[in-house]
Amino acid sequence: MQRLIVSAVLTVVGVVAFARGASAYPQFQFSSGTTKCGQCHYVPSGGALLSSWGRSESGDTISMAGDGAFLHGAVKLPSWLALGMDLRLAATRTDDGGQESPRGAWFPMQWDVYARAAFTDSFSFFVAAGLRGEARPEDDAIGARFSNPGERFISREHYFMWRPSATGPYARLGRFYAPYGIRFVEHIYFVRRYTGYELYNETYNLSGGYVSDQWELHLTAFTPPPSAFPDALQSVGARESGGAGYFEYRFADMAALAPQFRVGVGKEVSRYQGGLVGKLWIDKAKLLFLGEADFIRQQVTSANYGQNQFVSYLGATVFPIQGIMLGGAYERFQENLAVKGTGRNSFIGQLNLFPYAHCELVFLFRYMIVGDTGQPAATLGMLQLHYYL
Amino acid sequence: MHNPPMIPRRRLVLVAAAAALIGCGSADDTRPAKWSFISATIIEPSCATVNCHSKIASRAGVDLHDRDTGYNSLITRNFVVPGDQTGSSALLYLMHGQGSLRMPPDAPLPEADISLIERWIAGCQVPCND
Image (cartoon, rainbow over the protein chains, first blue to last red):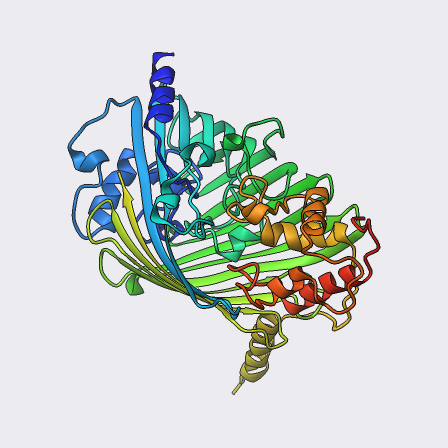
């Protein structure tokens, strides 16, 4: 109980954060020599706080130099407590073809604080909290970017977990993303945005599964936050209840295939989606391929109309030397497979530099073609500075 | 010597790649020009994102997070002129980026979606939130 109180106090008092999405780097699976996401993260399906193994990897394998431990190893926390923080500052340049384009912006993208308290070897409680960042604040003054922290406070994730060992069964109860798909750090990817995993789409879940060396299964029942909950506990996006499943089978520590499904039933709209995730690591070339394709049946009850959608991602990432990750990807989302001109194609280039443990520099460029009637392309360039504690 | 069917397979791959890039579908848009459909499938996923017109952020006082709230926001704030046959409703200007950012600024809408919204506005006899 004392640990729970300490965690709650740390969270409430210590948080001044611009919350974003839970950080996960699916590109590090296989490429870092680690085959399971749950090896580096406390959560079996990956994301958020790094375990001691993950922190060690972040210094020794991912970055060019440095110590990945909490506070660079200056402070050793008791074994029952884990703390962390993500801070991201971003500068963007967008050109969408509108009369006010191109436009530049800079903003605090994320400042999230994490706390995990273990009550026993099997049970733990995790909370992530921060402030919502704003890419386009209505008041453009510098001070406005840091104003009204009370209104922007949000806790995206908070849950109890039972996980007796690194492999085997586990269960989670609380708020988080139901495991599904390739969960990139950047929420702009179509396979996140159009499948129910946009920014702050976290739901309340009862989730469980099994992790072994060769395969893992994650099953989740989810529901949106009750309307009566305060903004700090609310989510955005479709208010659906349902279930999701993700089964990953790994081959020879270098490849994986993962069928998945998600059913979300809402008052006005229901979505039935399923797809496949593929991962292939070619060690000789230090090259990783990631792919995902999902077919979505969207049924709009109130309009008595159903439509079929398709969303996909195919990307390649190369790790030329330790501390550098360079990737390119193609994405497609077709909003209605029966109606021409409802597709979006995007080409993304991304360079991640990890010069020193805890530090990351991201360059991202996206070129998006919308529809097929000669509409202007939309481009996005982003520079991001990321520091994690 | 047996020659494997390389050319047909390549063509198949090219056709599949082209189909994936260009997309499929008919030129006839059979989707209902009704607010219940437009709100749920176009407006909410594209515009009611967390820092824009969600219930939490309500940028520029516009909340598009569900059917009724979104309809009221657009009608009472005059972003939509019911029955407008000329395509001059402010919402359409914004989506075309005329005098502003092209809305939504991070992922503009395909022209097919804007045309559907235009048809809903043109046929709108208040109330038209069905």
